[in-house]
Image (cartoon, rainbow, N blue to C red):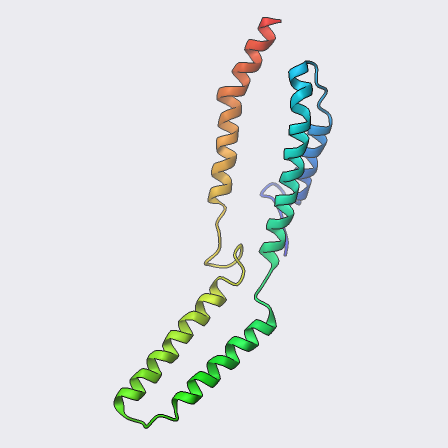
Length: 152
């Protein structure tokens, strides 16, 4: 599965490398910055762990053993219902049971890979988080930096 950013097909993992390089280049110049640096490093490591977990989850699928159990159980259940006498009511019940099982199987297939396909988790929440962080940088952090550099 290819993981490429929008800009020129560059792998997204390089963005994380840039974050680590930027964090590693931080030279704390005040006691407050010295106190914040361990927290920044911890959060950066947590970011990497969460990314790895997300990537593993995105590539995971329902195991073959589970599929075999579900399909075999479905076949046995539907086959056993044909032991009933073929009355109109029983045929309706068998049809409804088969439909119900088919809907469950469809749901399993649709949700098998949470980050791919039509029923996947979209990029919207991630883009909103990035926009919020950028707005925070523009509206809160930059004025604070200007104020603190003017106070020196």
